[in-house]
Length: 227
Ligand SMILES: [Zn+2]
Ligand SMILES: [Zn+2]
Image 1 (cartoon, rainbow, N blue to C red):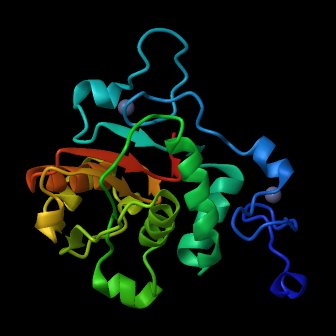
Image 2 (cartoon, rainbow, N blue to C red):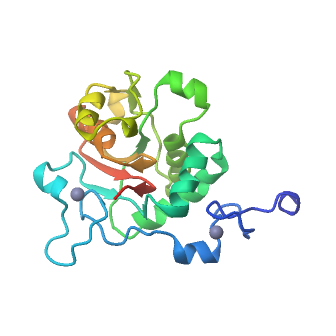
């Protein structure tokens, strides 16, 4: 009934689509900037066609997580949709983003005990009204029948990392997160959800904190990654 008044629209281009659970039109499904050539560990888009597909960053410093699932490059319609989702209240995109991420995760045989998400500071939460990574994590939790738990809290209000020079980003997030509900962290295989990965500073820090609190293994999931 509702659909006839508010027909679902593609989250990327706004064209009408059939389903409210997976709002991607046929045209976008074909043309979106898929992250197909990427680092085997952190999913950073790379162009090398030979050798082991491991990026320079991962070679220099192995990430504290085992593997990252990132279906898209942060560009074009994907970038614009994420901006609308994150800053302009388009929370109805969350389920579609979760479904797209699930397709990527299912390409591997990895299993998890729990799902968690990168937290935002409570002041930011108060201003925005939602945590964009948490919404995706909750839908994924439903789709995969794996519990979603808040396992981290953001204790430091940090500046938007995108506005900082690269060398400052790792320093800025150091000590910005602490573990929560530690009984659910110990010896668990945890899927950590973020929205986009830019420098990787935030996800590395979150994974590090979870590892330190006793997690057996961390996997990372995000919608897109910058090149
Ligand atoms: Zn579309
Ligand atoms: Zn890498």
